[in-house]
Image (cartoon, rainbow, N blue to C red; front, top):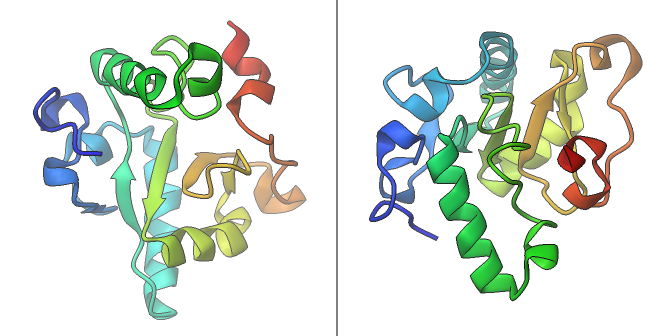
Length: 159
């Protein structure tokens, strides 16, 4: 869904809905990521490129307003706040708002990162969102933690 009419690039929206490079510091969606997450993502992207895979950012750091609009859209699309919560967090609980989450595309790039991300501390968090990754530095040694089925199982979403 293109949110460019309701939010701007400064809100973390990716312009025109087109994914941006993980190296694009001119994009607030990338530049606003936690520096450790961004660094791990860039190391992974360099290695993925050597495998012929380009990691792109579909969504990164978002402003609270952008997150509110995504949540309103999800409620309208899914018919209830409870169902929308399986896909979109509130501005108060979203790891995107804090710059601690990134959505990766295209699907083959997300699959590459799901297979190789633990080596960089990058883990898929939700089974229903194969594109959503967060930094878990301990994963480098211990592997990624078990995934939640969806955000409703994540205790961080109950703040």
